[in-house]
Length: 132
Image (cartoon, rainbow, N blue to C red; front, side):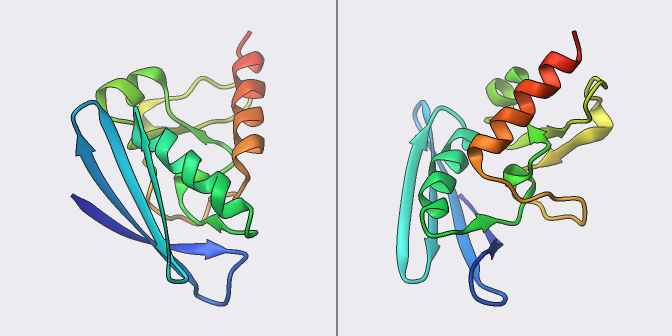
């Protein structure tokens, strides 16, 4: 079990959420504690669990400031299956992803572009289309 503290964009100054991951049988369980509330998601991989939690946070105008919530970051099928969706690629339109672009979804960096789940999925689809 691992725990990550992540800044929440749209919240009070320096407001954070605590994300705790657990593995159970064939599910990846992610819990987010913030503002005295708890959101729990159980999905096939941690990226999908993060997306489930993000959809609920979006209802309060909050976006986690981590690579897993960045517009141009998305996991490959292999990263989802073999790495439980904990790693994802930074994507650049018209360029295939490389190993150097692999990031941990709960890490933070200066190149994060906070985005909704819907916009992130749309960017991923645009990136796929750009590769031909």
